[in-house]
Image 1 (spheres, rainbow, N blue to C red):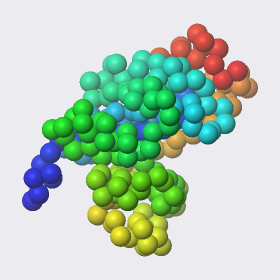
Image 2 (image 1 turned 180 degrees about the horizontal axis):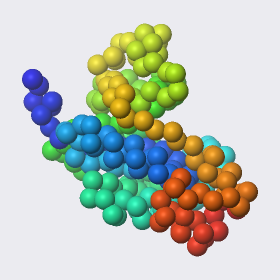
Image 3 (image 1 turned 90 degrees about the vertical axis):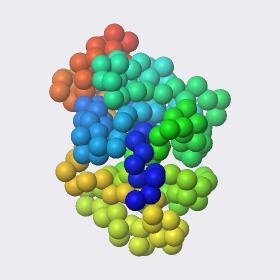
Image 4 (image 1 turned 45 degrees about the vertical axis):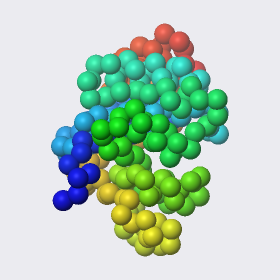
Length: 205
């Protein structure tokens, strides 16, 4: 067994979190429960410079995540991307977090939808050489098929770990934003702390 296989892991969970949902936190909790090596999940909201429609400002998304993460010692939220003057590449974010957690193995959690376009990411060869990526299969996706159909992914097959089938998630912040705009309840879709924050600042109206 390699020495790295005994190292505790820090999982970087990047996303828009616009807003954060129960399913985001449930996914993080399931990862910790299923993989004993995982010491902590770090939520990394993307910078609002990221080209995505309806992405509210950085501070609101950070504070909504923080309100929930503060109540779980295994969760943390990082300002690393939102405080950056430019949008960081994923590999840059991981390197910076690795510097902070030198005694841990840092890995990245993403969905199979992102795996399909991973070969277009900046510095992808460095990303898949230096770090492990946990892949959550979405819908009817098959991680192995996606890898087999892409030469670059096949070349770096050792980088990918399929998240256990017992880990399920149904992430749809768009659905929740539409509910808010329509004046419908979002109770049980997102934590109470997030609902209170959204109501306080009248977000997504």
